Length: 230
Image (tube, rainbow, N blue to C red; front, top):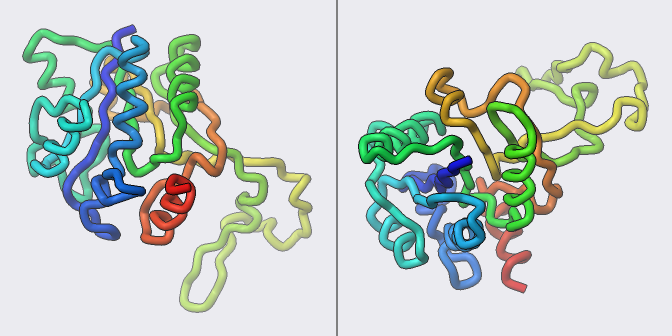
């Protein structure tokens, strides 16, 4: 199986400006994902590694860190509303024009820097050993479930599940798994035909909750710094 690894890192970020290259313990954030991807490549677990970005600063930093940046992503697929499908298909089209073809794509989010090398290896192994179109990473949550989830309208709590007030014990409903966005794998055939990165019943690679944090706020960033700067 020929695998293309893509690290998506656009310029824009509403919450944290230039989030993908913000300083974390003396390193740009993206380094923590590039380093793991380079190890995957050196161990022949992936065939190519690229950073997909629309930003010259991110491109230059990524190149210095050892990643390939063969193109700058067009602005029309670099906005807040851009989906993963857009930049993946753009990258595949770039390589197809060079007569370079891949069987699957693994997306490694740089905003999830605590994912471990072994987390990624486990995901690749699960995908290769099972027949499926896609894989997601997720963590187990023991407490979250529909019985304790509400929408808010004005000052009213509107339950997701009408059984929310029936006194069901936590141990009776069991755990759920939360997609953490750290790792995605999708077959090229599937994404090209369906324009989706996640199939109806994807494979799952379970990660720890601690490894699953996705930096979205300054509080998340502070947590990651406290972990990595020890």
